[in-house]
Image (cartoon, rainbow, N blue to C red):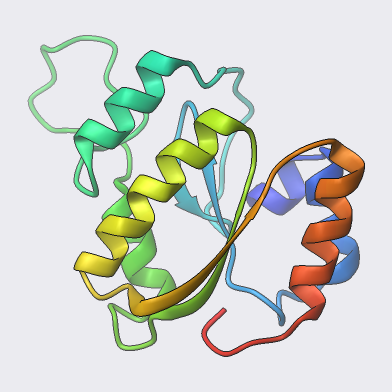
Length: 157
């Protein structure tokens, strides 16, 4: 099922409540197991934690590394999706780049997302003057800030 239906954390509940029809934002998520994905991507249940090593691997892999990573090196054909295909789809292959972006999550997730925003800028998926809002802190504050950002409107979300 799509991420907004699969995940049930407080921030996902806020997203579903404030933007139930997906009209205020085009949403992607960063997963320690799946990498960066468009939120409408069907996903299965998994359990993975973001670690320093996973964050470093995601940053080193850039937009072309597929996630989830293969368990062995013996695979001939790579499995999984890569961040580049998801951001391309969300931006109509760069024809509709993001001008306003919210990065929401813990410090390791923010570190990876900041890196990806730089790559997205280089590849035309976000505008050169993209407005980036970082949402991090106590969960109540994050929910409030996400609600405010979602209700703020804005071009290119």
